[in-house]
Length: 138
Image (cartoon, helix red, strand yellow):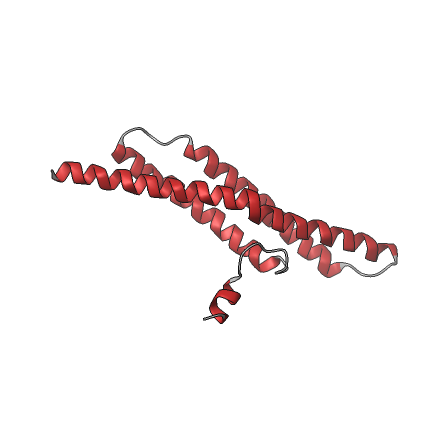
């Protein structure tokens, strides 16, 4: 009975982490990256308009570079997470170890980039409440 409970917990852990990973991928692809990319595109249009009249665009260009690097990194992290989800071993013990050692690490890396992107993106573009909004609404 102990062994059966152990395997049930392993399978439950694997299922929960898999659902969280798939949800992360979906949120990144459908909401977070589009928000960052839209903001970046609008900044680029603004730079072009300012440059046309000879105005300085130093701040915008620095922000665009940071946004671009972060969105590229987040895209790569999302693709790695997606690819790593296809390599889950069949055995419950090996799968749980894989989810812990690989998938949760991939999710943490993507989360770190998404959090940084949130700090760079103007709030009207961001699809979720910001940490500040969540904390200040309490």
